[in-house]
Length: 425
Image (cartoon, rainbow, N blue to C red; front, side, top):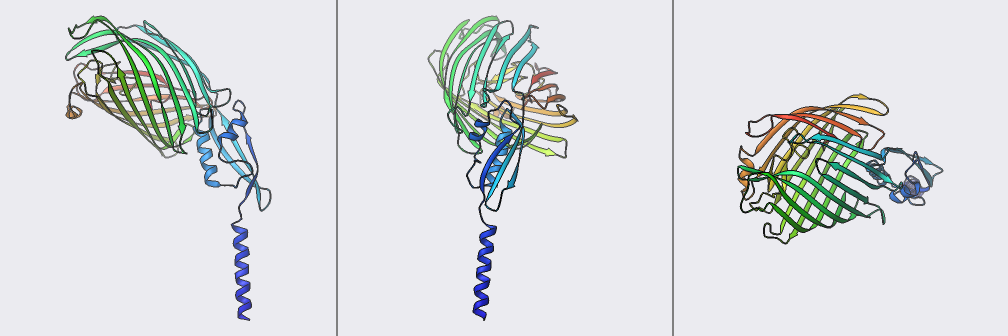
């Protein structure tokens, strides 16, 4: 009798385990809400596919990856069981408008009115291709053409091709003296793009460029000619670790981007040099409407005593309120931190206030690591700003910040307004 009970118990447990652990096959995968984005592209992009076993972890990752695409502002899914063995997966996406004009205007230190006009489509042909260009006039004519297709060959392999002809008036620093030069950079760049896995991606390739300097005014250094043309080749590697999750204008998680470059040059004024910098991003939600955002940039380059040092101190790059191309260095440590709070949020528009502090320090050309701790090289700016965010257009965030100098540094801006498109970081 006991033997029969044990046999019955084992049979019952075996059948129950089989039923509850039975894998479900995806009978169909349906995607709703896509208008411009090709459904065929999205189905190739997703790891969740028809006729495969349903993997809830992979499906969650697919949703996060969809929300990282410029074309998708939000995505969610639903699983409906057809019977015990089969199910249908419904994925709903909310699309961004991705054909976006770029309009910027500003005044330079010599009160030259400047503007930049561009047009970019971040979902060209409905296949997650970014394509567009710009024209800039800041007293000189500049233009650029950019093509980036991260999924051109497959989900994991793509290509980026860029060309620009950039001109601007920039200061070069010779100790305590300054000279103004017209700087012209003409470049052609080709990069391969490889997504290693869900969180890791690399970009690698080369850039052929020519730098030209033409003296305008200011101090003259006998060692630096008034006219200079430098032909260079740059080898580039970008490694991205991305563990960010998006919910409309809110971001949560950690991201790291490493840039490494080696530049070969043939001239009497610069040797071959290398440069790297790493951007660390950390975002966290604070209550329902708050977002704390951080960026830490650490960078070093070959430490030559030259006015052509690669790290710049600039409004639009690192410290809001400091001015345009205030100084240069061969090393940089910058921490940007800000609290963003949504004060208005409707179907198509969100408005945020933000309070920020930007702290940075530089290594002088030819200097040493102690330069980072020198009070003369530490700059602190703090301030507040507004963000007007279109929730239906990719990267359509108009930002305005006012930064005020906190510490006392001679010959630096007391503060000022900074305008731009997109979040500062």
